[in-house]
Length: 405
Image 1 (tube, rainbow, N blue to C red):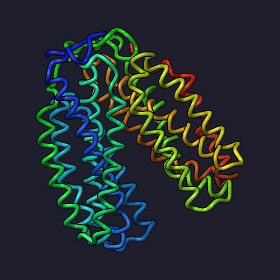
Image 2: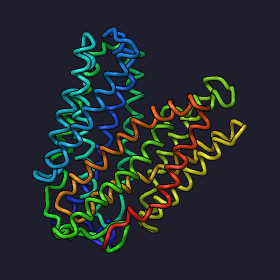
Image 3: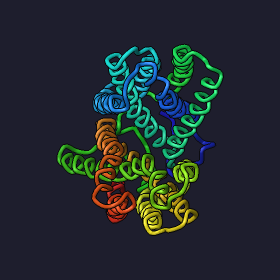
Image 4: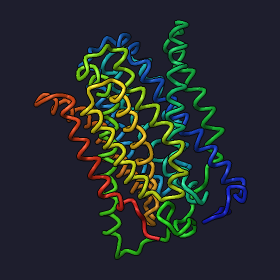
């Protein structure tokens, strides 16, 4: 396959590589858009199906379990058939099931719809990231963080579109069926432009920790590779647990700790989300210059500094600054961890990534629950010391994301 390595510029890339990069951008944006369209319609779907908040929480947990199952299934399948085939299959599945919750009439049908949607989303998450690593490897420099930034942009567009359709009182089922059809068309235009499966031995990459060699690992060191997968998964768990904490608790922490209004408290999540997205657009350039270890180490330290500021600050401006620093610090770490998992040089790259994804996703889900429990022992602000310790541990263990050249 034509490609580029080392210091060769993007202008020297074969057209299929540049086209594949654009197609992966589209898939990430599409996935973020579909997830957002479900999230913004949760109140309407809850009202339509008549489920209580407690029941809805249990059903969302079922969706998460479906997502983990989809992740675990997608890894080995992507290794066997290639990530392009899995992106297409999972993309079709999620496009067909995104309308399911809007068609549900009660808790049982809503549960079935959410499990189906969650499984497709989990499978797409793994397969599109596996394809992104393959494109990055051919591109010759880090580009994975930008793909994750496009996911956030897709989510933002979805939230605006969802708000607009609800403002115009469009029928929920018609809206979501239309979203599914548009998604299928967009997927059809993108999936055929993705890169086909190649043997790991033919993949190229510069000899440095930011984008390593992908020569196959012999059977002897395979146990070492497996240990590294779980080490990467542990770091992903800590990063995503901290991110989940910010998503669910940032606004409430500001309101309770500083006694401000709900409107002012909402700025905390806004500051975090804005810097998280902006950071992902810049993380690739930093990684290309300094390597992925620096991104994880200094990003974790910056995130820890932000959490420490949030815990100690008695003022709104400095507290918002703390949440903003947390967003910047976390923005580049997870893409670097996923890239490292996909570049271990094994012939099971997608399976390795699925393991890292699954444990990381568990951290994202567990974070809010753990913080909620810890807050009952003292306060919500004091409970943030737990993710602070976790993220400092990530800084100390950042060398784990270095892959052998």
